[in-house]
Length: 401
Image (cartoon, rainbow, N blue to C red):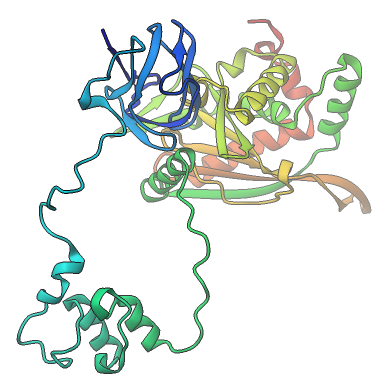
């Protein structure tokens, strides 16, 4: 008997997922727990195994299509069995069935009011097109329509109002699931969070020297992201309002520091989360940054590893960036952007020296944090970077978890 497998909720609050790739085609044999399909959630690509063994009778959606949680993902049964008609992905309404409400092309010429006097009655155009023509001063009787039955379209009117050559539109690309999620989060942050950004440069000579020494001693790469996380943790402990979320009229101060680290991937920007970063040594942070970075770039991280950060560090210096105005991720109140260190002339004791200056940009939610608090937080981060012994010697960063 054919069995339906419905799309499960594979992440917190998941409502839909996009089919990336079917691993077993219709008519193919699948074993229980064998990977069946790859789907993309808001941030992760997840392999879903089959809960049944048998022949794949139908797919609930094609590659690139979106399914809601609870919808039939696949039907599995015996090889000679037909899938239920209601879940056959390829079923379509009969071509002979009449349209329910007609089509715009068939009815467009009937939509023009009889008393419209802005153009001769012989001109076929929708009321909105006639209104646009009046606003742009275009005589519709002089316009050759490119629509069905010679109907004048909006594009025809725009071209008549702008006779100069118009550049070709070019390729039209649908946004990926991840890019749609990024767009939604950025729009939400931009509309809901009144952010303020404070900028500074700091001498990173000692920080970079400590990094080289640690790499030489351990033989392990120390990402700049790990150093910056370690430098920021003491500031978050000293100013807990930065490690918080605004919930209505309440500020929720988090008990652990779950540090988000921005990762540049081929599919878009992802934020991987280091859980309880305040209780990790620098070497543990370095290993976790490397693991999360590799997982994000290959889209192998679980949804839980890509959400729930309480503060974010974004190393735009890795792609050559300097100062910027980072957008505060929804659900947090602050983000620190780190640029590329550049050798710069610096005045010291009446003499000019060359030092690697690291550009920093701190954005924060001005509803929660005032400018003075922002500067105090930044001052502590700057102090830690100038003298890394201040954070490398912290007990909470030296003990094992």
